[in-house]
Length: 332
Image: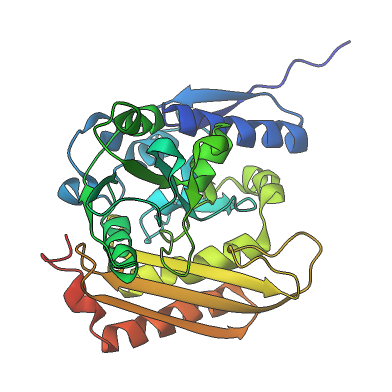
């Protein structure tokens, strides 16, 4: 007699094209390691329906709260988030069962006429909804001897790129990982160097979350976890938490896991020997006039707590240099 078919695991995801794409990739991986079917359950979050700028609505948790509530109510078995959207405080009833290998953490420019950032004309209008990007883009432009106008925008990838195609903006800035995951990386006209534009803490990484008391599911999802990515994002997020900043604050951070052949974009390649971790952080005013940007390097952390300690130590140095004063009204 054939055994009864297994009940599908329900994966909670936002409805956007990007969220559905990245959740679909995770669903395929979970099917592969569990042998069980996975059903995507679309959930609308407050951040999806609000048209206000993230800085105005607080940013922290606006894309994840509804997913977490669905988990707690038992409507879904696990959820997939863009890790950069997660508040730094983890609810006791939930656990990050897996942080898969990170995508490219960098920001990219999508500009008219195939322009790079250095080629943008003086006074170019550049769209982004991120105070972090505004601060660093304006500072980068100053170093190039020109000014740009950063314009606050919201919307999905199509909407944002549409501002460029319509001529309303000269360029927009997006996460490289997002374009890569929806197969549109060719539309990027420039990858912004992390020496000038640090990504959001956790950018490019995904978080797979489930109930903390579901040991069987935690073990299964844990097979998707990448320890090096987890160590890097723990360092970045502990810096963010120590600065007492939310995901809409003008804070950038990137932990590079450096090997002899590392690329410098935040991820040592598979099979390479990782020698040390370099953590960089930045806080700035949105006009780019003032930045506090520091870095620290140390041995590869032997535990995730050691990675988090690295983030806290760098945050303390940044606070001593005046970072707290750049995250108030002037920064927002």
